[in-house]
Image (tube, one colour):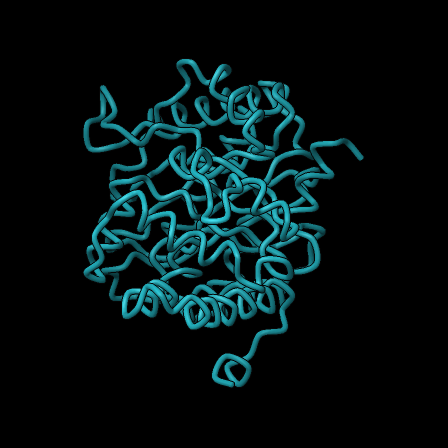
Length: 336
């Protein structure tokens, strides 16, 4: 077992998953404004520290993806955030891409940037305590898209990123997200997601990336948000498993799903069914942002000094996700 494989497995062991707290300042500002809280560096770290110091971190959260601002911030007790996380048994990760920008040659699609100067930034993040990283490629579905240009360009960028991350001794999370936006069918999502993931691994192999030290962060197979032909949670689970079995090499230790705009309950129930049906060797867990934080954020916004109350809401959500990652979730436990 390589060191990279050990890190990847530690993050996802025993029903643990990943808290995606890597919202950019712009995205976090929108989230805070949606609950009428001013977006200041102090408020951003206050909310995140409230989650990071909750009891559920030790049991249910194996890793936290941070943003550049957060990994450099100090908690109220004077500790750096990666130290705070390590004390509760969670590894610090870092989002390293600089965002999805309009693609030259196909302006309705996006290409993720951030490769320039990445090797140097990775060294800095490693010194700050990061043990894993994340890079997100985004693909929209329509009759024309995603184009070959988008699929090939984003796969190439993800592979170059992953190779640099492993060179620096960290585990890359590879996140090719086929978006839910649109009126496409679940079959369209299945076909495009399969094509995207297969191309990503083709390029990862070309760049000599150690697949046993990679975590894949894919979308689940869903019909588009505006589709009239929504599918059941059981069908989502079965199609998602079928897609991954056909597209992901066996050396990959774990898959941590993104929630991608699903509600907290939907993301939990779908993950639970995926694990009930899981007949692979892959660990199937979660790397959720909104689907772990939304209820806690709403509670916190009512009284930002009610730390225990906010943590209780977050603890429940994290426990439910962890149960789902083991196929043990139920609506009865959800509503206890």
